[in-house]
Every structure is written in structure tokens, then in C-alpha cells.
Length: 448
Image (cartoon, rainbow, N blue to C red):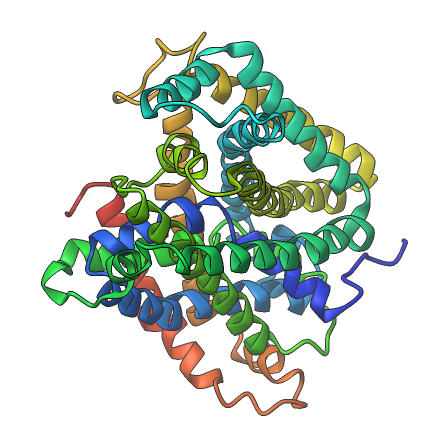
């Protein structure tokens, strides 16, 4: 059997893991939720959630993956022989397909807008025209499906290059560029006349606006922002070297992901307030609000192009991590080559993505509980699969996995002190499961 692939450098491994976590949620949801739920107060709760839930669950996934250097199913079989815990792998596989199915549709929209920005077609329109432009895009089945398929072709071309020459190389280029573009945007935003109002909206701690609902929103945003729960980081950490400090890397991934979210707010809201635009979240922010702001800025063509390049980088690094989950599973569980595993993963993904893209036009009459297919996939992935996966991971590592495995992984078999180990285990056992449970109750509408 050939030697299993792995990341060549720690920097490449970190870039890939951060790329997995950083996505559109950092850019189009976090800043708005922070501003609407107490600004700095929300951010403090968010950081607390990262410390007591996010980092411990990331570490749990790292421990499962690095301890076995295997996919999720093989790892659980090896760590708990004779038990049926490995069956949960199929929940993760299904979740990863659903996420990339609807997420790649949004990524297709981003390529369309990147193309339009390059042509200079995003300037000279009224707010209503920007709304109509986006509406026309999603109503056109050929454009919607076509851009989605182009994005997936790019995604699987990266996957075909393997771990070191594909995932690691692309992540090592795109993540530093993403931070550079973000910082350039932030500097420009801070020089705008509305910078103070924008920063106050984002950072001013107004605890009177922070309700229990806001606290649950902060917990949910912290969990979903890190892309934990469907074994992305189990898969990536299975390629880590044995001398990697798992706690240090978990803290680094969570910190950089949080930094991107905060910088996104610094980038967006001074501009929003400078041009007297109502703060918003979701697709309307990226595809309807921001293009109108860019056209009013000096050098608007460049800013529009840079912005959609930024969100393209964030999108691609997320989807390649999602794709690697089933690819690794198929390769190792069915003993097939990487090209063949990519073929089957791509085939399933193309079908799901096409159906999601058509749910805005040809299949728009198909609805479940008032949601179209795209929205149902989004709901199921974010509110069910990822949360169940995160809950399982925290409970499994915190309560079921042999403590010696945890200790050996945290200390690298005694070579590191592992002073944070007891704190991490406490959070895995008691705090993270309770937090995830309440997030589940809130996001599914049982409480709220």
C-alpha cells in the first residue's frame, strides 16, 4: 500500500484548516448579528463561546483524526473496536454533500458577480436595479446552474492535485491573499467619514440590546462559523504530522477565523454608514447592497473586483475541505484511487448542486414546510447535521474515548506539557455538549 498523503508544512496545514473554517458566514452574517445584538457585548459572548465550545470541539476533531491518520469511519473503528460509533460517519458524509450542494450555488453567484465586476457592469445602477440584477440571475436556470457547475469544476480540479500540491498549495496562497485584501479594505473603510458610526455599530458594548436570544445567536454563530460538526477537521487533521501541537493549532484556527469575522465588520460597516445604507445580512448584503456602495467609492471598479475575489477565496477554501471528506472516505473504505473517488464525489455533488440551483426557477414550486429545496438543504445542514455532528464529537471524545489517547495526542506522547488539557477535557465533557444542545433547540425553533 502506498504511503498515505499528508501536509508538507505546519503553515500549509494551518492555512487549510483556517480555510475550512473561514467562509461566507464570516462575511455576510457575523458583522450584522454583532451590530444587531449589542455590538461589543455580542462579540464578548462570541469570544467566550469560541473559548468554551469552539476550540474544544476543534480539538476533539483533531484528536480523532491525528490519532489514527484515517477517515472518520476507520478512526472510530480503530478507537472503539467492536462498537457501532462508526455509523455516525454516514451522518457526516451526508451532511458534507448537502452543505457543498447548496453552498456551491452561492459560490456560482459569486463567480457571476466577479465576472460582471471585471467587465465593469456593477456600476451605474440604482438600488432597485441591483435587486433586479440578482433576481434575474437566480431566475435564469442556465446561468444559475452554469456558474455553479463552473465553480465545482474549479473545486474538483484543486482536489485532483492531491493534498500537498492541491489543497495545501491553494490554501497557502489564498488565505494570505484573503487577509491582505481584508486589511486593505479595512484601511480604506477606516478613512471614510462614516467610520466612527460603523465601528460603534459593530463594537460599542450595549448590554441592554443583548437578550437571551442574542446570546443563543452568538453561540450559534460561533459554532457554525468554525464549520465544525461534519468531520472536515477530522479529515484534515488525519494528514497532520505527529509533532503538531494540536491545542496550539486549534487555538490558531479559531483565532484566525474570529479575526476574519471581525475584520469583515470593520470592512463593511464604515462603508455602509458612510453611504447611508441600511445594515443587512445574507445574500442581499453581498449581491445587492455592497455593489451599490462600491460604485459610489473612488476606484469603485477595483474595490468591487477585490471584494468578489475575496469572497471567492473564502468560498473555495471551504468547499475543498467539504469535498475532501467523502473523497477520503471513498478512497480508504472502498480501496479506490483518488481520481475515481473524486469522480463519484463530483457526480453526487453536481446532481445535488443542480437541483439546489434549479429550486429558484424550474423547481421553485417544490416546497417543504414553506422552504424551497435550497433553503431546506441549508436548514438541514446548519441546524441538524452540523449540530448533531458537533454534539457527537464532543461527547465521544469527552466521555467515551480512552483518556490515554486524549493525553497522548494533547502532549504528543509526553513531549509537550499539555497544561491546557484538563480545561479542554472539562469543556468537551460538560460545557460544549450543553451549549450545542441549546443551540439546536434555538435554531430548530423549539425555544426562542
